[in-house]
Length: 337
Ligand code: BMA
Image (cartoon, rainbow, N blue to C red; front, top):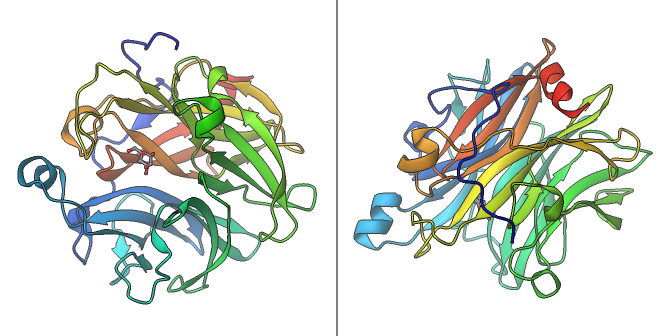
């Protein structure tokens, strides 16, 4: 296992907003931890799809020995993508919903992607028989959704490219091969589909060994952003240090989640053109390193490319709240070319 780097910091080309953009206290229904949110611009507004674990928080865990009561996926809208978020009065999906298929335990870590006029969701789906990657479709009014397809277990962190490539839908995904790869040596894969239902032609995109600061696993984050030079693609990268302390539900929380940056070929996105050699975003503010539910976690699920060239990156901080960082597309490309 490669040595764990003592300190990882956010690249200076990325600017983090000092305050979270969405926290649990903003929601109109009971919520404890609101994080890992996908965001798109849709009909002149920013639409956020976020995860909420409810029932308790870090204090409830550590001092009262309480467990979570469930997980929901909710929707919020904002005019500027920063503040003034308006929340739907009830979650879109709620693990407590009595109508939910008993096989399904919960949906979480949503990504939202618009392809042509369709609003698509990629969700992790915990079931009685394993973790599956699900694709769903949102109704135009964002009030309901339907499941289109779900992978076989174990698969998570699925995200669709925002347009068809070579006439096919394409997704990044992260299967979890525990037997053949050893403890958490997980990589980023890609597959293609004619219709969002049938998926195949799986190809390895990036192995964890290709990310110098990761010694554990990597996975897809937000939908890639198209540029003239290629698909600007974030990924999450995990390094584990068994000497690390604890926060969260494990007896020990030994992992650190960062975000890396790579460029994928426009016509064949299974082909990696470049990977930046250091993390683009690392947990390095108090909410990310000390104050949240799980220390040292940043987990992006949404990127919005503005006409000005600014890229908004929405990420879950410490599995506790949603934060926003910005960068310039040209600046990011300069790291990769
Ligand atoms: C991953 C997922 C994410 C979470 C992250 C850090 O395995 O469960 O939902 O944000 O761990 O806790």
